[in-house]
Image (cartoon, rainbow, N blue to C red; front, top):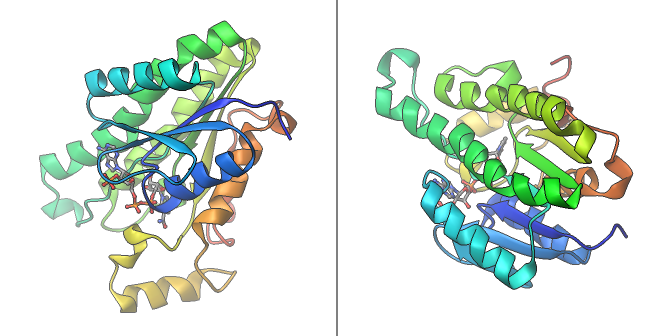
Amino acid sequence: MSTERVVLVTGGNRGIGRAIAERFVAEGHRVAVTARSGEGPEGTLTVRADVTDSAALDAAFAEVEQALGPVTIVVANAGITKDTLMLRMSDDDFDAVVDTNLGGAFRVVKRALKGMIRARFGRVILISSVVGLYGSAGQVNYSSSKSALVGFARSLTRELGARGITSNVVAPGFIETDMTAQLPEETQAEYRKSIPAGRYGSASEVAGVVTWLASDDAAYISGAVIPVDGGIGMGH
Ligand code: NDP
């Protein structure tokens, strides 16, 4: 096992974030999750925070630091969709998605960096999506917010790579969670046909890649985009 670390996962009460938090607990780390509602899995500390609110995030971090110590692995997972075609997309639909998916990652990573710099160790893992680079009709807001995470991780790699901090992007394809369950059954079947693996992925398949990126084995990987998508995004 890698050295025991303090991990914070945003949106760890359900879906992919919950599976990631579970996996970190199973690997013996001290794990906190932020949640707006509900609780993180067994063995985690749940703190309340909305990722669009810097003050709430700051308070949540203070609580985690007090209980578990400085956070050196941060997973920016919280995300939303507000899908509609561009011509119908309101400014609010655009702003809300970008502010949560990109702004939220910015706020949470920024708050974690000082502790990482002090520790001369850090793992920043940003949960993007295959559609960030593949594109998706009806998702100009979402896709933009997700591709921006690539520039984010790569810029941070150039800023802090020499300080033992890595910054990577995980790009899931279609994963079985509440987010994909919202899609009409017909659309889900259509998507399934286009996935070389012939099935949706599970949240635990994403979690395994995230914990590996956080491990000592992945110390020399930074600025990478790791697809977990059954092959749907090949070539991107
Ligand atoms: P879910 O919709 O199941 O869960 C979303 C999580 O994000 C919830 O914990 C939710 O909290 C949290 N969240 C949303 N907005 C905020 C906010 N403003 N502040 C704090 N927490 C917030 O999504 P998934 O688990 O499917 O997705 C997780 C991540 O993976 C997202 O970034 C998503 O874009 C990405 N992804 C998902 C894919 C999929 O197929 N499922 C594919 C590719 C990427 P609450 O319960 O309080 O609403």
